[in-house]
Image (cartoon, rainbow, N blue to C red; front, side, top):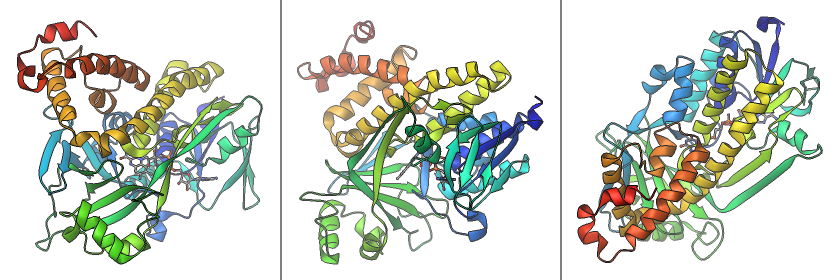
Length: 440
Ligand code: FAD
């Protein structure tokens, strides 16, 4: 059948559903997105989770594939490293990668808005206020809460961490599914521009106040404000449950994040008015059933600590697009290869993201961690193809996540031995780097 006559339904006009619709429409398919919410562009409100996100190489590569990279990068703020704030307010800038490598702070709402506009510009129809409640896999039919049922030739579930398509798949035989909430949740707070109208702190960094079991982070916005996020245990001695009054908030922040307090003027109000949200990891398989497939968070919801949720979802779109180039149509062979490639990678980035919470909230403040970064930088300079720090493999390369995790593990074993050498901090610079490389 001619592609223009093939109807594709996508559930969800979020970041991934919108991008997927553009690449499919550009390939000639007749694409309709069904979105649960009203049109945020008309409502003027930008709902959803975090206010801004870190966009990195994998996401940019997928955007480039549909011709949108430059347009989107225009509204990004580059963050070449993390700025660590210690308890006394001392700052330590740690570059993420090599000179010229950076991640990008981008507005979630702005990016979603632009992707929806671009989707419509290439002929995608977006039907708002359509919440899918059930799916027929054999006829790619979506059933909506407004009573409608719409059939297509193929249906994608890009409907996020609590996907209706996945929910329908869960009721079928031999569908594997797991979900796990971590013990911490998050709350967003606002750091407005300084009185002179400029950013209150350095905009070209992702700011972190690492405090062991919890942390505060801040990402810059184009209006010169920062969005701060407190990642904090729900329960326990120091937790959302233990901080009950404005005086508690004041005392806790003054004790732990002293340099941030004067920069967050509405701290006490926002702390109690802004929601406390939870963080989930979802894994499942298969991702394909009949004439339907999962993509993005619907297939692999991960915790946000590697800044890879959206990036990995965009990479799903890129991989699907490349497979369409290879196979020419949505065939069983294509769908099998899609899930064979992406399920292990979804699981790998889920593991990496869970691990990175410990690194961000705890290890970045550790002397051994800082030393490891210095040694790894040197190894990478000397042997750029043989030693790539794990963070760089994940963030600045398009190496499969499953390969990155395997290589990272091997490198960490070697590094653990190096770091255990006596007085290593004094003479690491004169080590035999070739002997280290020979071990990986
Ligand atoms: P979603 O963004 O959840 O979109 C799903 C869409 O489907 C929504 O529009 C929803 O309304 C719609 N929908 C839901 N159910 C239905 C239904 N039944 N019928 C029809 N429509 C439906 N990722 C990064 O790459 N970098 C970051 O820095 C980063 N930071 C994050 C910070 C936080 C605090 C959180 C929580 C996440 C972060 N992420 C980050 C992850 C990122 O937000 C997600 O991976 C990304 O939004 C996934 O996009 P999606 O389109 O798959 O799902």
